[in-house]
Length: 304
Image (cartoon, rainbow, N blue to C red; front, top):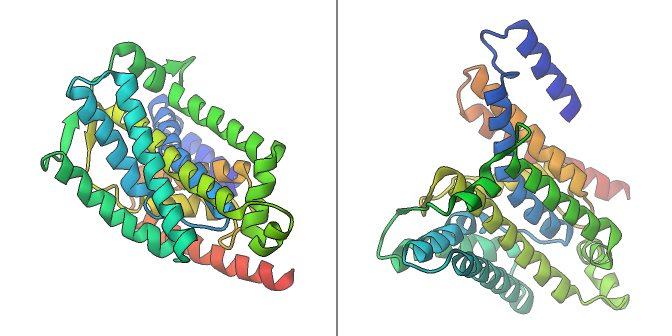
């Protein structure tokens, strides 16, 4: 799917270079940066889905934790401490989601839906109702996160690096086996000696942490952090995972699939923009992919 879509866009760019600007340097860089933005969130959400849970609060975490970092930094806190503060909040949110879901037996969909609204509203309240703040870190930090390496946006290289780490965890480390087992059959995993609650708690924390990583990259790139909600980013992350073959019922998926899902979603969005089509076409595509993913997952479950 990814290869066929990419080939179609390249052909369109070659046939109509004056109207369909897909092959221009500026557009390619824009696509790579956009892949990174959703890709980081998708990695965290994907690992959690493999472990059998959902996190709809990542969209709020994506804006709230970088906002806390920016507010702290503007207030005079050293940048490393401000970044640590953002990650501490992310870990706290992940732990809260895990505790409510696993200890109280509440579906993670409901838990994280509530957390989405809590985090979204608490951030501006704590910051004295400020909705945005300038974030201008030292040039070296900004260059390390948003510069170019041989013409390739460095944040895309960061994304590939994080994806490689996630691949090693999922496929070359015992934690990966625990994620698959916890999401595939939690009861059998417990009989095998796996601490399912601890495994899922780690997955919840990773989802929040990866959303924070994405938010920090974005805030650094645009030099501003805002608490204005990023609509549907959590659903786009789920769509990325579904496109990449992650099971909505847990126990199946791959990091490579998640990366390709992020690429496909962004290529579709770029094609819609370049073709000057209405923006709701992307929402329609995301909706279709989620519904199709449910249908295919149900078919696979009946088969096996």
